[in-house]
Length: 178
Image 1: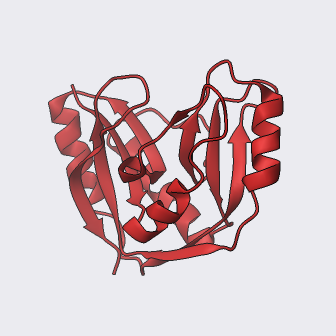
Image 2 (image 1 turned 90 degrees about the horizontal axis):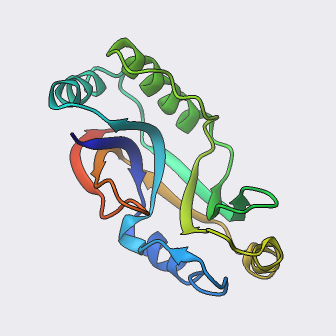
């Protein structure tokens, strides 16, 4: 059973810049730069037949122009029990529209709706039993930097192994934005 999700790849030069933020939070598990991505829609563990349906239906989306994506700071999920540190993307209506279209298509294919609000981001570190004070200090000292902008000319269907922390992620199919 493959574990699938759709996402936007992060170009190597942007991944290199983001990798400079690795370190500085005791107990954090840092994501490898080659696994940086923006998740559009988590699909989960599905059987091969549904995986084939997903691959096919994603090809039926409407044509879109390449997306300009800007990374504008660091943040965390989890509040007083931080779970992740991430690079935040600036509000982007086109990216939200792409995600919404994928949500509709995947529901038509028979998948249950995504219950989490779409918050485009790039996970840099996963946290477990990490001090919220350490995370707050890290973000206060590292979280503001010159904006990083790139153009996404495709989205991909990724597979991952069922393990702690995901990766390595494998591109199963690519869908151009043109």
